[in-house]
Length: 270
Image (cartoon, rainbow, N blue to C red):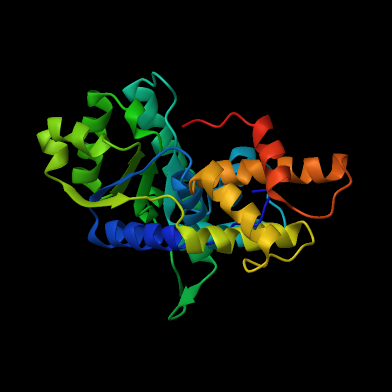
């Protein structure tokens, strides 16, 4: 990711949820409104911003190999977003591809370790993958869901399905899958304290200090709360525009007028 990841309370709750699903080798559902941070948290948990480009290139090995092997072994997780109208056969082929690649990386890390004088070797690298996270799970057809359920039953692969609110109700129509659900996690928008936590870091990135007791800053905070309603994605989109407005108008202070001007550039839904 281009910007430093901000660890919020919701991300910590997601991590606890993912660890529980993984430990119990069950199927879990994560649901929440668009833009609250579900995908960011899932990719962070899987170290996907580092592993995906590394595996996609898959060229000659280099100096960064050991780092990525260690990341793969630590996460042992595949993050996957199905295409719109993805065919079930293609879905399972893609998932297996990522399982193999991440498994090979994890296996390479284990081969670098020696236990009691013996090198650890894994005959089937896919067995090293403990968790599959599927984003945009609304795109999955009934056949795709049944294939994932079957993969879970046969290999004890833990699975997290991420989607919009109501996805848990949709799965009630698939008794075989629903009976295997172990955890359901509601990913919420940022609360007041978390908004202040995130804003403080954004203020610092712009070389400024946030003071909630200052009248101008308090007005700015209130404007951001009203506009974003705790939506993490919208908040992240807002700040590049705030920086742009400050630069164009040669301003040093982030005021509510600056924020309103920045927000007017964005498409903000209800």
